[in-house]
Image (cartoon, rainbow, N blue to C red; front, side):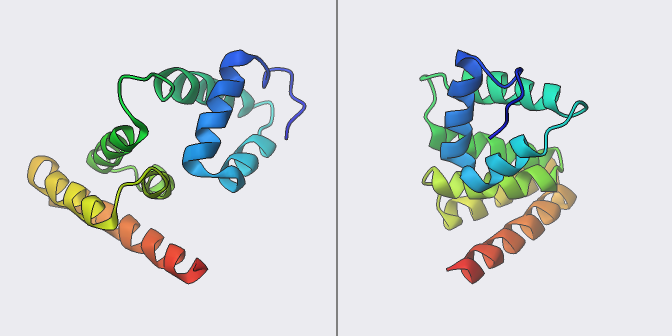
Length: 133
């Protein structure tokens, strides 16, 4: 892990645990290990507030949060984050068929370009996962 002093504290640890459970140890280990003086503050912020505070709230389950993330990332045309959260959504119990439906919903409400870029990310991630099996 990291010996960075800013990567300590109860909220950071809570966020790190949730982040690992959703995105997997390998991804989180790479992100934290790669942190330097420029990127560590953002890693800390995301781990504590995104993962520890928001993802840690009990009012929505992780599956629902994953659905929301996929739709928002597709709508915002953020394919890099979409790829990461596709794996997380599958880890949280969202099925491939449900992911397809999210992309269709995005096509209607956000437009074809957003849905096409999201679909490209979906296909790439599914191929990667299938090759790993």
